[in-house]
Image 1 (tube, rainbow, N blue to C red):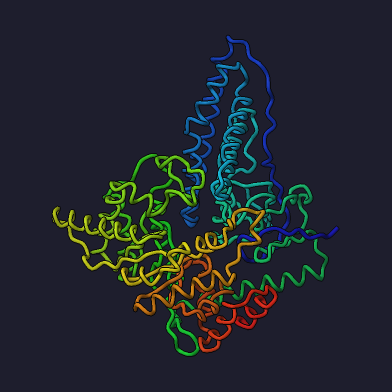
Image 2 (tube, rainbow, N blue to C red):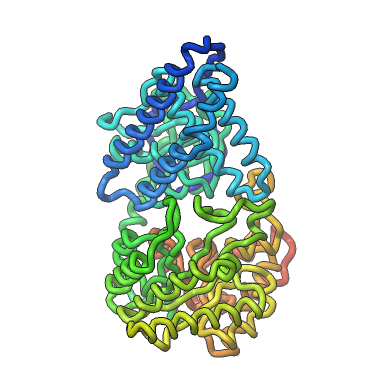
Length: 574
């Protein structure tokens, strides 16, 4: 029987293959009481399970393919960090001693307590991090109960396979790279989950949040996975299968054609030059930046140097990373964003979780509250500035006092380097991110004080509409085409133009080819995005005429009718 399932498309493309079901439902946990004389043995059994799980995760990390995304290692390190945390490694042992229960039950009870604490967090992204805790605990429970891992590292298939799972962890993605799955689909998950991020990095078609796919699909069912539209077709008839094979072939042809655009001059049909920059997290991403032919790096998320570790990176460690990226870009601009921790990115050494972390001590607020940490990073970035065209970007500016304090800290860092006799670019460009409505509405002031502006549309949309796109219950209200959002973007671009300062967009909107012409019409001339999206955006730039896109974009600024919004967007992209 043929039927369709609809979820969230988190990584584009079309895959056709046979279902391979994997069982990663939660392990059933027994409960029983122990005689006091067996407690010592039970504690030893628990420690052995922790050790076995650590060995398993480290083995997975050692099997990461050379061409795998850098994030894979980081996510495995996060799971190893969770495994070593006392909340998982020690608290269950206290429960075993105090209640004389078995190890499985103690660990399961602690997991539920941790999940309950995560559920109290307002921020949906942070709340979803409970998935990582559950995944780690499940591995320990499997070790305790003798369950084997659901996929060996040396599995191979003769035909295309689509992995069907209830949920997946980032560690599982390493297995996918080795067994060459064509796509994957899951019951749980969303666009901001670590697994979704990895799927996009690996260009693997995937659909998540299907809710009951694992229960409805059987092993060896033929599946069509449309990662763009979020559709899974089970056992399609011949006509549907033929149609999707054509679509799949066309998608592959189009993807190959895009590679030819790498060396093309980036300008519109009416001769307007456009800069296409790339966003990166780690030095390993530089190869993808070069492969896409980016004009430079518009956003280097420096906080990834601080994550998944129990200590702070030293000045020399940071300097080495920033220097390596600057030298690898051969004189092209490298924009390093200062530490943007808090809200969706927490470090184990960081501050206690706030009731509403998205509105709490994060980004530049955290840096100003931790002058020692900030000073160290500023010195590292400044030292790297002599090795290339390095720029500095300050995240989440909202008040003028924050800007003044930040500029003072930068001057202090420069003075300390002079005192130490260390060289740097004294004229390094300093920019600010426009991510909150307050900053967008007063963009003129920030443009006068800074050398450039960068619009972070992800946060700007969330703060403007009070919508967290990671929350499934309100995700449909997350709207980059809302006139309030578009007006703030245009206002910021115009403020920059008036002050003679460049303005870029570095959020998800910049990498969405359906929005390229709209942003061009609003006056945007610098885009920064994941390297995988760059050539698709470039294709839209090459086909656009600013003279034609501007009038339609201006109409969208005033439009409140959803049907008319779709019509105008179709006209822009027609």
